Image (cartoon, rainbow, N blue to C red):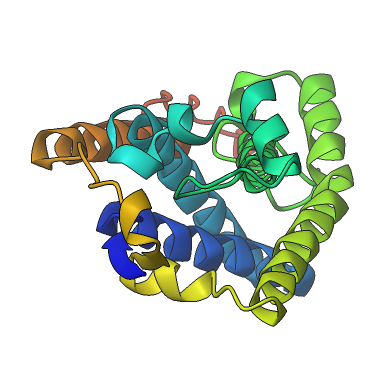
Amino acid sequence: MMKTLVWDLPLRLFHWLLALSVTGALVTISLGGNWMVWHERCGLAVIGLLAFRLVWGLCGSTHSRFASFFPTPARLKAYVSGQWQHQGHNPIGAFSVFALLGLMAFQAVTGLFSNDDVAFYGPLSRLVSSDTGSLLSGWHRSTEELIYALLALHILAIIVYRVRGKNLVGPMVHGKAEVPANQADPVKGGGWIALVIALVIAGAALWFATGAWIPAPPPAPAVPAW
């Protein structure tokens, strides 16, 4: 057995920043009131992080790329039959990753257009009609419980693997996992150029999500003094 790098630093930072942002969004929506400002900020952070992950999943290092762990029928068969020996996410873990990323993306995007018809309006709510905004707001609220369910399954899987002797948290902190020496594959790709591209696109997605590019509405007409 030997320790080899599996998760690169950008992926590990993404993982923990996303966990922090999602936790912040869930806590602040529960508190409500003035905390909704921070709920929006956490949601915007999720948008930027997911945009980064999308790019990093295409041009990041070996095990960060979606193609390396997409759950194909052949990979599922190998895993179920006990012949799975690859590093990175196994096919079942891949389903969890795609489900979480997809649901968080859905939550974050619908939140951009949501409103409570009282005090909170998403940064892009002016781009849709009132009916569309109400529909997206309903979807945004109704899928919140799914996030709790998927996060609970994610944590449960970590505990089960830990009981069975496999630590999943450690490698996501320091990046290295213990594997048989004859199965150790060097991590390739994910250099500085790829990182800069991913950060630029993430920054552009974050700027777009803030709605800073939307022209300000015209001022209300003045009310005559008489």
